[in-house]
Image 1: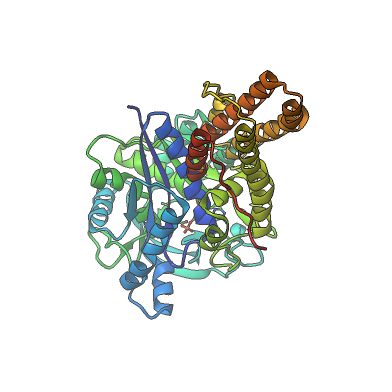
Image 2: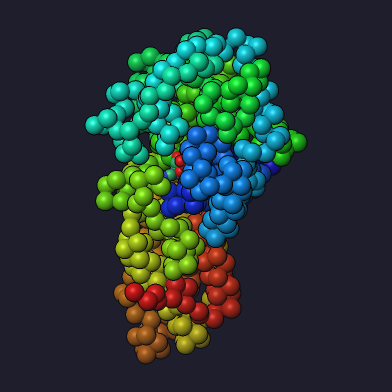
Length: 469
Ligand code: ME8
């Protein structure tokens, strides 16, 4: 069985999860399910990023110790996966002592290999991003993502010699040649352009942050939260897997954390002689009226509330359907409600219902002849992470099913006693439904199961009931 190891980011537990977190996790789950259905041995890793200044500040505000604070929030992230039907193989927490030890060993290796140096540093730090920003990053003196003013920090830190390793191993060409793939292409070019403009070494320790992994060899500092976090992908394979599953096949992330995954992480791996992940794919952002949805900004949609109202499958469908995966797009409850009504209730739901009703009413004989009209085209799109396109293909075939019924009017064929034509027509739509059932399995697993059952028993039950406005 070929292995397929994919990851989501590990999310900050400074607050409850929002729809942005749900987006990446759902996409990862769709891919994982698709690969499982195709016979791959899938390992889907997700989890929580629990150290650093951002979490420490949130804990302080909640008048809790950081550990108590994260322990109380982590279950909300695990629960989100459950509610969304995201079947992870392992939920990873960076406060796991085994991971902390692996982080220290990793840094020891970086040090022995000659890629760490102590330096004095001064810069503008954004706690929301957990990174130093350059004056060029700022808009009106503020972080464009978090709308907060960064704070000037001056410390003596340990630095990772990013520029040295990137040059020695020619990271630029590893990315350019797709030996280490950065997707989509626009993101790859963005990264290449930035590397060309020059790389700065990265401060990988903090004197002022107590809540973190102790820096090996200097207990007065903690490991920079991003270094701790990135190592999770490798550490999980050591803690939870015996077999060789590193390198990861795919790191799925949002575009906000592309630099860490496409430049800093591979450089860290190269410096300790580990293999590089095969691919990093950065998707776009949900925006609300054009602004990034973020906890720090305070304009988030609650995925749990949406699932309670529309069901997990509809939320999974609606958010992957709304706009192409690599791009940004506006989202709102109204948009989700519209997809629900038009494409799910009046689309798939209606096609299934009316077909089963007619098969029963006219006593048609249907058979499970295997024609998967959609299989190749949907599969290709899912593999390219074109979820939006895959769902559009499925929607079109639903539309075709409904159109065939409208055009050929089975009720008139029945009136005219045209039994053969009637049977052929209902069989055709029945096959279309079988093919839809198969192809939505990774996107809407429960709906697919329900459809399978109904197509077998020919007992219609509403798939997407009407929702009170
Ligand atoms: O960055 N639209 O965690 P985080 C789409 N702990 N996706 C969004 C989104 C939005 N508006 N907002 C967030 C961190 N996301 C680090 C990661 S990994 C080693 C460490 C998703 O809680 C998207 O995947 O800020 C984004 O990259 C991630 O959540 C950031 O989550």
